[in-house]
Length: 401
Image 1 (cartoon, rainbow, N blue to C red):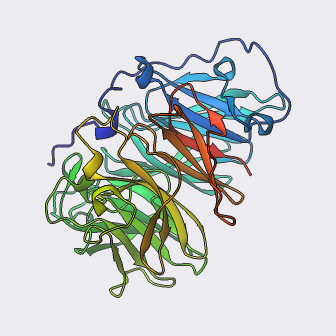
Image 2: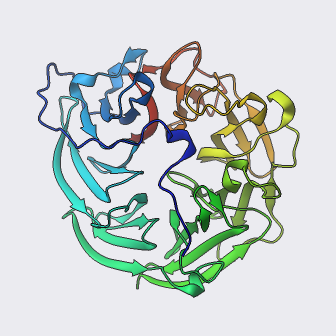
């Protein structure tokens, strides 16, 4: 079996897990439901906890996200939104999904939780919602997908991916991560780790028939490595094509290429005519001209995505204190990268999301602290300071439209 170590380079400092505490009284209220929820890791402040912090519309004007409405959760929490619900799950340990309900006073109330596995090293890599009554959760270490009902918070099925035919080296450990649904098929990006975060060469994806929850196909492309990640690392564009962020073992393996692969609409194989290989590019406006990998991305529209990407010329080996990630505009059709006029961030804050025309970046900066910055996809205007100041590093965020 492959050896998979339970760590991520950007999270070296936050490896202690703290149980949830949802009994803290709310000291003050605000008007209106939360418009987004920040998952803030407090490791930068010497604490090993994370907080889910709801943010209302009137707080998105340079205010500080209020800890008095926060819920303490397991470290390295990530979040996803469905209807009026906020779902939280840890990316490091504890295969438990917790659900919170938005309230009219801007708070969140925890109303359910679901344990997906009792395995000591289990972790939830990604969650996608098929409908109000069906969702997929990928368990990277256990090599399976749990199907659950997000309304009743009950587990309905498990999809076993621990099969030799679903792994690049026959070891039956594909390590499922990011997922995307298109035309009745769920495409599952595989880490295929030799020794986390070092992956085997190539980009590998499992195709599942959603109606029957049956794996149908295993596809590979050796031009890029490490297909998908967490959050938004597989997305569908306006044409119905799937783009996959391949992050090539964080750039630690010579010869592995990072970039974007494509699966065209109506197809279940990689597009042999497309590979946005930025490993071999020289990018204007970037220190040293080179980038290694995108930590997270967000599709906007018309072939344009946004993300934060690491620059080796600015990295000394300190994931917490080095500010070596650029916020960039990604032109998928013309295969270009353009740095935005936003501050550099550390690997502890890499969240990217979208609210209307605003692209929201959770950044931890050298001069303006930690918070959420915005970039307008239509006007090209970037915020000069955080639209939300955060008490910790914003590692994930969920937006309610």
